[in-house]
Image (cartoon, rainbow, N blue to C red; front, side, top):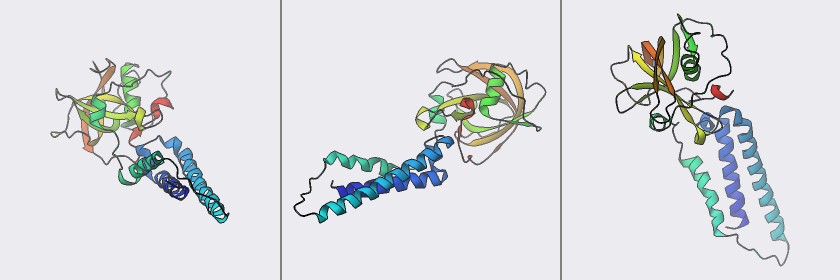
Length: 236
């Protein structure tokens, strides 16, 4: 690989990062808060590519300059570029969720419930209030929760969101077990908006023995996958 090829690869990689950061594609890889850093990285790579091309052009104008190719291993830079251009992986779903233990953590405190009837809650918020707050803030209030569906080998249905620290590589599931008026057909990875009420029933995740609270479903309807499929509320 010569310098011109390096500049071209850096430019394309930077352009791919800018494209991912300017669209919702980046949300498949990193948390929403990292968007500025992703855009800055793309801009830096493009600037480095232009500087490399400019330097190489000036160098070739000098007499007696001989070109020395860089090691072939430099072509490995094409791999992340091809991954960004050719492969747009879906967000992590039920396969990953059932093979990882729940990441539910005990919060320091519980804020007031949002307004509304039913109350809109995230999977993390409902699960933490039900498992660690023993449902005290949920009694008498119908809730509405959205997540994707996962089914274990016994047929137990879970509503899940993958919680993110930084990027998809460290995503872990938070799970709510469902009981009550479930839809007659349950399709793994389908997104559902579930309305229901708190129930004190609790089970344990077979992977890490973490708490998985139940939600008694009164109604459920399919919804499109959200713009950001990951949940970051657990570390905000």
